[in-house]
Length: 276
Image (cartoon, rainbow, N blue to C red; front, top):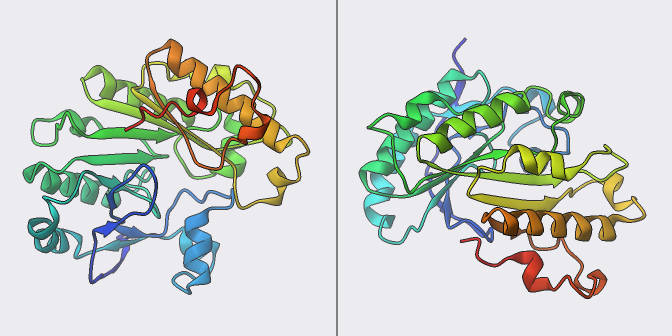
């Protein structure tokens, strides 16, 4: 069944996020159905763009996305450092081929003007990304990965790709010479799941970059009595791991509490400000 579609007046927009420059979202909604809760879904419901969780699960494709790029790129390409895909949808939605095809077309269009793309997905990267027309060594391909537990995924990311498939697809891109990264956000507190972050980090030791951030928008984590100490400890684990493996790291703003850092845990060491 074909996806429903929408048209937009603009596609590229200036991002206010600390690690992104420009961004685009070429679909409305996301079939992965994350229940963290999902900030994007909360925002779209509040604005009346989607009516319910069920509505959010039925993505609508932006049918004039390529036309908008053709109009906007000539004007903006010299200002753009990179285009982030995506903040309010997923560029490689698991088993949603229509979204994935449009993503490949958008990447081809960005490549034509030598505009760098940074992607993140809870889906599976496809082999075509290493084809000559799509290969771009400056692009960065990321996967969202906050656990290795399939039980956790089934509860909190119910329709996303299995973790093993995400990692294997990302490793293929790495082995083909492309830049890869991991977003460990929103990382759950032990009252949500007890796990060892070192196991997760060990599974992605091949990547070029790690972004780490806390679980937001939920009383489940803020009510956890050792919330601040926990995230300081996890941030230090991430920073130490990245330092040992020569991986760039970025701890998102608001994740650590500097007043709770120990004597050997300076803010500079934990944030490892060589991210970009």
